[in-house]
Amino acid sequence: MAAAKRAPGFTRAHLESFRGARVDDLIADPLRLLFVGINPGLWTAAVNTHFARPGNRFWPALHLAGITPRELNAAHGLSDADRQPLLDGGIGITNLVPIATARADELTAAQVRAGVGPLTELVSRTQPKVVAVLGITAYREAFGDRSVTAGRQPRRLDGAELWVLPNPSGLNAHETVQSLADAYQQAARAAGVLPDSAGPAD
Image (tube, rainbow, N blue to C red; front, side, top):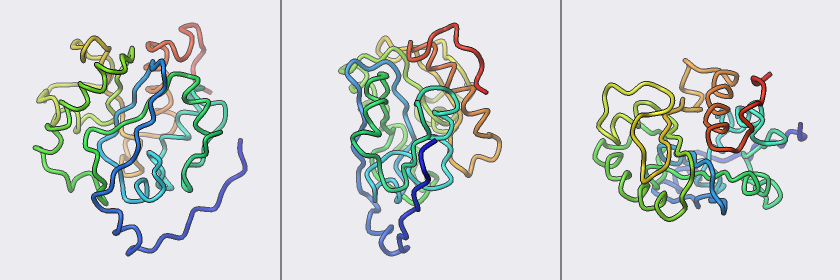
């Protein structure tokens, strides 16, 4: 595991200055697995790196699932060297709604629904094998499917397999790093990022 980096000491005012900012997508070429968050948080926007706020379980879960060779600390942002294993593995990260807010529940349902069009265009352009939406509630709002359950969906998105996986936010108390890793590992296997024969995450 990489040595821990101390999180930057952002003030509330500094973080608020990033409200409405956008975060660059991470898109491998070729792209196998596209993770889709709801929208960037203010900390994520401040360092221009997805799921960067300390306490978010995305990066620990990716490592535990075997998707990254080490646990990445994104609190300061990721370096090019940090990003390279993700790109080499065919991983991408984007958001349904591109603008940053303090909390996802500040978004309107209309904003979330409006994200489906641009997401579909991105999938059409990059052709991932699997698209994994991180958050059942966000998926229900975006795609209008109130009966959806987690896992692989019967519908596809512009030819890609569509999965609904748990949101890694620390506010999602129903999930642990282990349960997130197990879910992300399934999607990674389906996408060919991990071999089908891989054992369960330790």
